[in-house]
Length: 416
Image (cartoon, rainbow, N blue to C red; front, side, top):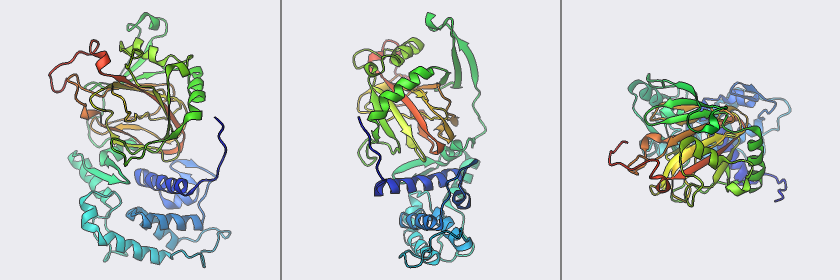
């Protein structure tokens, strides 16, 4: 399939602005650093001009990114940009002061409603009487409350949801003191196939089980998956559609026959003794590609009680593998192979377990999405953190529950 380069359209431009503002919120990036081309710890050659900073401020005010919009407005008010910047006079854009007035009016007019809904970008007080000294942002206040109490406090943004522990985990921080006790070993007993080349196993969490396996796929497999998936990558479903999770990535689905030199399904069977290749035993391999700001909001991998387990494989380094809420009924999710380099961001986080998983090329992360009684395991709530810098490519394999009732028998125990 031929793909021709095209100029970004309005929706692409809007998506890029939303991604930038989400990154700023998640990782406390400073506008002053961004205009200088500094993203986290990375120094780039891509700077933001005065015109572009003005457009970011306009967009953030118009779309209710209140506390972030104020940072851009303050920057425009305080700092002079380079001499080569285009003059804004006559372009029909509002001055920083006019933007600030509009921001205060929008924030305060729906203050009680937005605050009650946990709107992520709110301040804790109305802004009308706090123009010089701003009140605390809702993020700062609730993050501190969550840190002190250990409570899960939900927030909302752009159709997605998060917890403040979720934000901390995306930054590699633990709110609670019960940090995971990890355990690693070489496993050569699961199948004779692994007698010479043992599996490099790591327990990330015992109950419920969260397991990582290192070096599960090689560069040849990664190349074949990339070449097969690239022509078919397409936008994720609209999050407004029932059952869909907010996700900013492009996806492709591959049958085993499309990657004959990469027997991932057979490898999963050997490692976990699951039925993966049988009729209706699993989903197609989902390949997801995440660029700047690419993320998936909090969700569980579950559809009609049929998903049993998940395997995510990092096809590229620093890739956080995320599942999609597919249309079939898998009960086992195998988080795919992470296949490429992501320099900053891209963790997969499990707020209820207080776990963040760093993306590592060629590794896989496994967990059961369902309990033995068939119900969804809500403890496996997870999200893919936004990519700050780099590219993330992952494969995800879901295995169905009903086709594996002999290998993982049912029980009436509510938490087994």
